[in-house]
Length: 166
Length: 166
Image (spheres, rainbow over the protein chains, first blue to last red):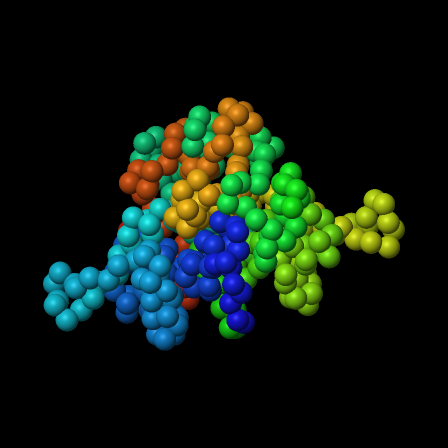
């Protein structure tokens, strides 16, 4: 399917999906978070076609989420690593994982356990307020049109629902 | 592009993407979170083809994230609403939004503001520990192969990186 023009939407969800929303990309990022650095390793882990993986990594390199370096132990080889911008996506992966563990896995059958070393317990990420630190329940949130909001493709009407008059 | 078989991967990220990872789906969910209920409203907001929107909503209905009801004011019309399972995806949307606001918007140009009514401030979601409530920094996390983990398509090698011997 042709990729929609999400980058031009006045929406931070759409813009983020423009970078990471293609099939496989979030699993490539998952493997980089797990510590894989080699193209062949990721390719074999996922069972993805090599041309597809190359295209996904190129997009991540172009968007500044991943960097490619000479392998420390082999000057002809290359390794892929997350940049600060890429590592900052870990809340997205944690929230996808938490939902899948809760709604799509059998009880007690999580494929991966996340241990919070601060308290030593197996955890799941829950959203908290960046200002006061309290948990963010959906009912405690109000969404408002922001200074960068505008009515346009991808956001033609939503502003009215957020208290914004076009 | 043909959809990969993410549903069969032993990975809660992949399984979640199997349900919500197609282009447009997360923006359809965004509009439902904003309070849109009508097919035509969502279609016009996004500028999406009607057959595409119908397919996306059908997938969400089939997966139990959305329910369709008779419109209260018009017995011939239908409204779409998030189920508890669908509403529980709000941390995914908040984390996508927070990353896009930080890395892809001009400073002070967020398209949408999230207000935490508990403290009254404009917030961004940050991940916290479901057990102790403290913030989850990436460096505080350890990932381990879980009881539902197995080596297979999509996870052929990652277990070794998580301390799991195949």
